Length: 458
Image (cartoon, rainbow, N blue to C red; front, side, top):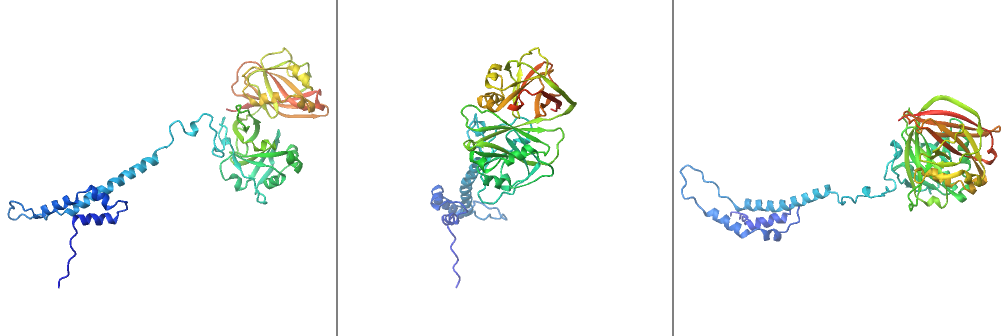
């Protein structure tokens, strides 16, 4: 008995079976059947099977009749691949399109401030940088100290801030973008942060005094904001200057000035800048900008000018180019009082200062630290301190100054002053009044100036 062969599927059955196999797409037979006239395809197939040629030359092979199944499969492939290609094209186009409407990107928004930690360390880029919001670091509440290691020999104090050079920082502080900021609220958190220290030489007394002052009593009234940043060379030193923000912005704004010597070592180091703040200010966000200041070399020998003349003060009207640096105010004057330079005067009371200070040219002084410093010369200041004013004459308006050290001993005040000269300067004369805070006991003492000159490299 012959086995019964499986009946050959009709075109409609082949189409249904192919649809049921799926081929990876969510298509149903009914959806495709609505688009294909299967009855017509079957009819055409039967016609072709029964049709015979009118004349077939002798010796000519008769081609096999074409079947409907390949046609059905071809139509099926077209129907399946067409939507697949359309979907794929849509996905590719969508992946390459920016969904943001032009002009609405955050970077293009006026007054846009980067989110915490989204901007890399700007101290690595010369020149003036845009302000950044340092990435906040969560305080360590584990009860165990962070694995930080500080080099006190290379660390220093400047103004109210401590600049701690870190030979190693715990990964919890450096995992993420820099700069970052840590708020320390009590002595336990400080001990956890401060960790281990070492010193190959004798640390500066100012640094030791600052570290020893961070006691439990200190944290009753104050907190610390620690800015963590990275320098591209261990030869670079930093200073911190407070800057002003537009009215209405509630932040603490600082400018980190990188003092870059002509020759740099190739080591990369981390710095932790410790800033005392009130308990209320500790919760205010920090904004940090950075700037590089190229340092030159001494081109003139130290010039000691003893017993500077103390004379009646000349009234002060400050012009543009006035600035603040390291706790001193450098005010540019627009006139010559026909006196001999340099000379000094001391101001010990608020009344004396008010009779001396006339004001500033409106809108001409862009350094916010200078105007803030003038505003701080109030009754509270003169209750505890006095003001030494050093008048100078310069042969170029391009020159700037830096007070490096002020020491009062043996009945004499010695001021170490460096004149900063660019390689190419203007030929105009310039007059300056440098305001230096002093203690009350030093007011009226003879003044000796140790002058140096540095040529700034571009």
